[in-house]
Image 1 (cartoon, rainbow, N blue to C red):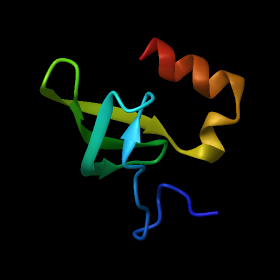
Image 2 (cartoon, rainbow, N blue to C red; image 1 turned 90 degrees about the vertical axis):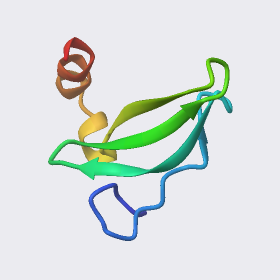
Image 3 (cartoon, helix red, strand yellow; image 1 turned 30 degrees about the horizontal axis):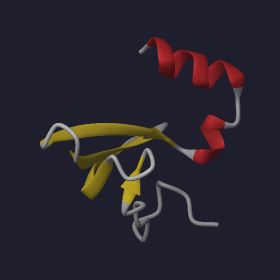
Image 4 (cartoon, rainbow, N blue to C red; image 1 turned 45 degrees about the vertical axis):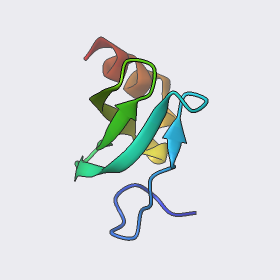
Length: 68
């Protein structure tokens, strides 16, 4: 399984059942990757932060992320 910190990471082509079309990776940090995505309902670009899989598996990390 590829993780988000690997240079070969390929983001999914869409998120939220197609609402967001992912265009590219903007940046990667220690806990998450930020994606540039097009909101197809609002017709605007959005930055979407996605937790790394190994981080997303812990309740405390998900809670901190949601509070961020």
